[in-house]
Length: 227
Image (cartoon, rainbow, N blue to C red; front, side, top):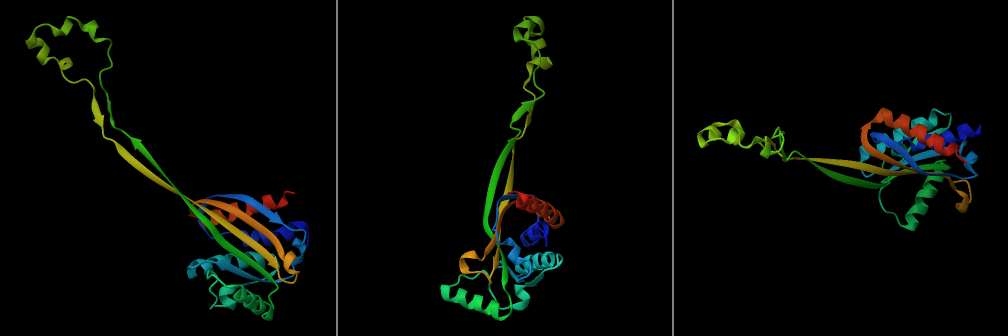
C-alpha cells in the first residue's frame, strides 16, 4: 500500500459527522510508523456521551476505513455496554486494552470533541432619522418664507425637518466552533511507539453532513501530504 493509501486511514477516521460549513485542520502529525496500521484490525471509538452521536460517528468512520480495504469495527457493535466517555482509572484502562486484544483488535481510532467555543455578536441598526432637511444653510431663506407669522406657521418648512425616525433594532448572532481530535494507535507496537497519527481540526457553524465529509477529507488529505 502506497503512501497515499497509508494516509487514507488517518483521513477516513477523522471525517466528522458534525454538520459544518467550514473546516480547517489546525494541527496534524503522523509518525514514521504510519505504515504499520494498514493491516491492523481496527476498533473505532467515538468518545461521545450521547449514544446517537457515538453511533453516527463510529458508523461513518468505520465505513470510510472499510471502503479502503482495511478492517474496522464500530465499538458500539462489539462492546455495546462500553461507555467511552466515562472517566477511567489506570487499572480500568489496562482492562480495556486487555479486552481489545482478547477480541483480536490491534488498532484503535479514537475521536473526541476537545472544545466548543461560542461567540456572540450584537449588531445595532436604526436609531436615526432619515429623509430630513437636505437644503442649504437656513440663513439662505431669510427673510423668504419667514415673512409674517400667518404665512410662516402654515409653511411646511416651519415643521420638523429631521425626517422619519428609524427604530433601533438589535440583531444577535451566535457562532459555534468545534475543536475535534482524532488519534490513531497500533497496539502491537511498544507503548512508546503505539501512536500513529493525530489530527486536530476546527469546525465552524454546523450546516451540512455531506459538505462536512467532502471538505474535511480534502483538508486532512492536504495536511497529511505536507512534510
